[in-house]
Length: 304
Ligand code: CP
Image (tube, rainbow, N blue to C red; front, side, top):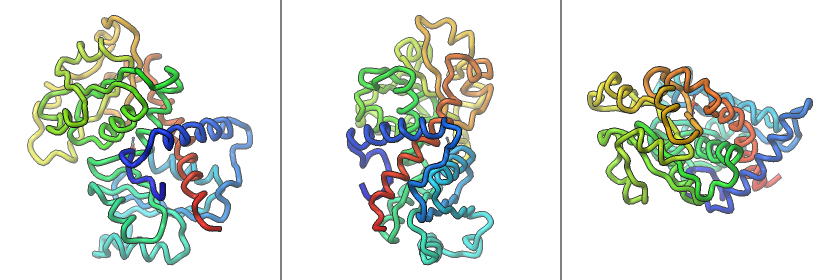
């Protein structure tokens, strides 16, 4: 694999290798001395054309733990605001002897486009509503950590699947690893192509939660909606919000996940987000080890 553009392009064996490498790095970063020299003399540019907290900081920390040199770019404070194109921007950055590019961009396919036009390893840190491969890797890794093998595990992805790159990347990853994936939400927020991916839709939240081992709650992405949001946030939260009473009424104890950022009180209440069934902060913790593994494995192909 030359780049990490999406989970769609990975084989099961690639994902297993990333998980095993992340196991190693998770041990490393739990030691008193967390830094290793693995990426010394490798320079990585983090290009964020869209806001981020977790992904941006987690990549930066992963790079520091691996001893890479890093430069950070936010489009809002750059010459993109003066009209410079994506390819010009990246080629100018690469001329400063940069080896790898981590990029978040609002347009689906932006990471693939870049990989076709510039000479660097590209890591997709989220491209519009398309893919968010490192998020799915850290999610799969977190389920594996909590439940063992992903094979046969039942995962329901709840909410705004239509606008979610997290949902699509997770569907690809979980299916490749042998898990069973269903989605749950109002039909206005479920993409029409979902059945072509072999994913069943459940419209009743309690039925979906009683079926699953793991529930992934998604944020309603108001910033990606081009029509008036339907249903309203209030209606959505009444029908599809997960609260403690619903969680406690289920037939079994399920694991609750959320990629963040959370809209507390909309898709999930605080008492669920902060409950012992929630592994939301474990997901964030695992993001560093997963991103270290991805960068380490991709950099292995850079000619020294
Ligand atoms: N999960 C996630 O991608 O969060 P950020 O948008 O804060 O990076």
